[in-house]
Amino acid sequence: MIGPFEAQAARTPDAPALLPAGAPAVGYGELNAAANRLARFLADRGARPGTVVGLALTRPADLLPALLAVAKSGAAYLPLDPDDAPGRLGWLLADAAPVFVLGEGVPGAERPSEAELADRVATDPPRALTPQHPLCRVYGPGGRPAGVSTSHAEVDRRVRELQAAYRLGPGDRVLQLGLPLWEFLWPLRTGAALVLADPDRPGEVGDLVRDAGVTALRAAPAVFGELLPEPGPVHLAPTRG
Image (cartoon, rainbow, N blue to C red; front, side, top):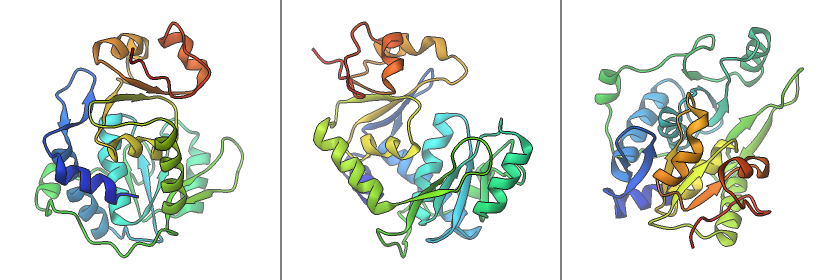
């Protein structure tokens, strides 16, 4: 699942990968190097195929390198919401048993210092990974629902289906809202750039669509009416002429 992104970073290291609202663009090479350093840090904390790493990160600019790093380590990511009730968080952590929790606001969560990451090698790390290893583990809302794991092979299949239906490529700028985290990997496999909204300023998303030159929007249909005058019936609505 992660190999196509690494190949894209090698081909176009200077092309924009992330376009955070109000911040400088992050190139493919820079993003890949940051994810590699973090992946090696996570590996030192026990992340490898068959294990789980919790992600308690709320800002997309922090989440994307972390998501890539977990995938590079071979572990599965577990999304954690710091705003969840303490009892639910405790149960999720006990059930999923992550080897490390990256972020803040969750019991046991940590973030590496810049010095800890700077000491790591920035090249792509090796990983003994098969397509059947899990990429993510997700729990439904409320109560004590069973966790559902999704393999690299299944995520790869879904991404290929999306790409076949809605072609993305270099020059596309994609804004995604309220979708599975693994869908953020889709544009990064194609050379497109991800436009990242500021979660603290949700009312400005419509302006961001225009100002950042968004060419594709991936969101739930109910969101379209707030962002585009004629949203259409599909989830991915190109704004090209």
